[in-house]
Image (cartoon, rainbow, N blue to C red):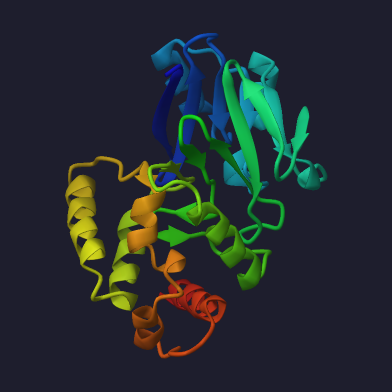
Length: 255
C-alpha cells in the first residue's frame, strides 16, 4: 500500500492529519487549522505539502490555509458550495466526485449537518474515511447550521461504509462522548468494553483514533438511534429514529 498517515494534535483537541503517497511523495493535510503544528509534522516526516483537503469552513479548520498555500503552493480542495467562505479554492468538489493525490484516489461525500457545506473524504481502496466534524469517535458534531434530518442522513451514509473502514475525525472527543454514550446506552456491553480501553489510552496520553466504522456502529449512540433500548432510556420509545437522534443531540448539547 502506498499510503502513510500521520496524526497529531493541534491545540488541546483538534486533530491534524497528513496523508502521504509513498510512490509519488504527494502529501495532503486534512484541513489546516493551525500552521505551526502542520509545519512541525511535515518537518518530522520530511514530506512536502502538495494539497489541503478542507472539510468545512470553521476557523479551526481553515485558519492556516493562506499561509500554507503561500509557502508550499499547495492545491486547496473544498466544497464548491462553500466557495463564498473558504478562500483560494483550487478544486471545487461535491458528492460523487473523485480526484487524485499522487496515486491515491479520493471520493467525496456531502455530509451536511454540522455546517450545510460540510464534506468528508474517502479512500475506498484503502478503506479510510476523513469525516471532519460530522462523525466523531462515539459522537457527532453539533448542528450549527443543518437540521437533525440532514445530520442523521449524513451519519447513516457514512455508517453504510465497510465496517473495516478506518475513521479519522477532527477532534479528540472520545472520552467525553463515551461518558454521554454510557448514560443513554447503559446495557451496551461493547460500549462498556470500549470505554475501558478509551480510559486506559487517555490516561497514557495516547490517541483514541482512528476508530472504525464497525466499532462506531456498535457503540456510537448517534449511529444507534434506531435501537429500541436507547429510545426507551431517553423517553422516546416508539418514536422515529431521526426524532431519537434529535433528542440525543439536544441532550448532549446540554450535558
